[in-house]
Amino acid sequence: MISAQKNTINTYYRNRIDSNWLNNSTEEEINETLQTSMKDIEEDHYELAKAMSYLQTYSHKLFLAGENENWELSEFYAHEIEETLEEIENGKVVDEGFDISKLVGTMTNSAFEKVEQSIHDQDKKTFADSYKLLVQSCNACHQTTKHQFVKIEVPTNQNPFNQSFSN
Image (cartoon, rainbow, N blue to C red; front, side, top):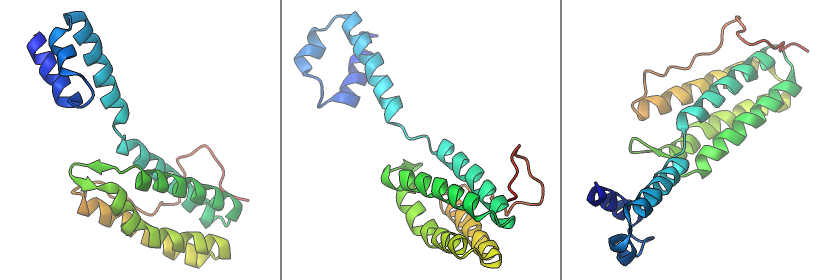
């Protein structure tokens, strides 16, 4: 048991732990270090599904606000989307071998900028068109990353949120 724990610690923290310490440590010290090490690894993991869930929720609300020409609320949700996209881009997120940070930037930024411009212009038609383009870019990214089963759609008239999106 101790040998396996030493190997695990050595594998993950080869450059952080003095090998003499590892060879001369008690089982209790090794267990404590292993627990701390595993906790650090878990904390370093970026939970992409949470960020995608935020994007889906914010984009749905953005659409409902834009369709109701509530440009102030649209701007608010666009800002939340922008912050989430930036977090992913800056997070050096790699998931299942795909550089999600890079893909998010290259596949969604152009479409999202068009959505932002339509909000700025307060143009409902351009907003609807640019929103569709954004959804297409999300789905193209899902295809690229072998997550084609995640299909985003332009929302229907049904509002699942307990929030009014009208002015």
